[in-house]
Image (cartoon, rainbow, N blue to C red; front, side, top):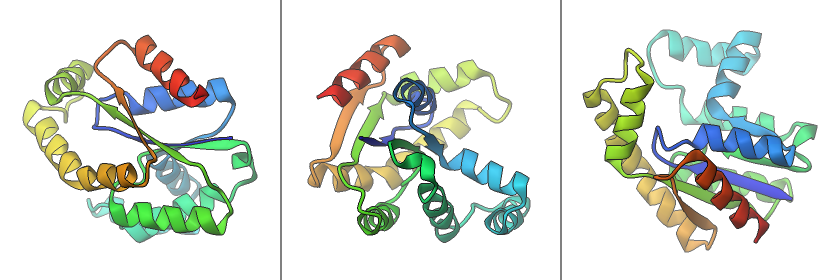
Length: 184
């Protein structure tokens, strides 16, 4: 039973690695971004609520994201395992997730921290060539990520759930490292 939580700065390759691994293990890749977009597209009650924040240019509140994650983790396809990507982002969300998993009698989740130096991440994101990806914006996103997520890394480290993988290598090497960790 594989239950993984992926952490890592924007541009570290979390989404790509999570998708690759999920396909290989035949388990769902649960991305909070995808859940949000899907809920808004389908105009679910939570999606309609989220849309009002997005339309107003605001971040979707934690409570709403947590409800969406809970709804997703209650789907039958997660019985064989899952990979969570983009959640939790803060310690409060990690506590929520831990309580939720305990209620659902799901244990043994592990946390993969895909780490890469800022310079590498900046170069990768600039290389994608998105309009909103200026170096200044990317560095700001990294600052926010490091400030919000550093306590989360400590939180999982203290609970002996944290596995760190060097994201500053080829996609194939990262995939190989991930598979080694999961097999152990």
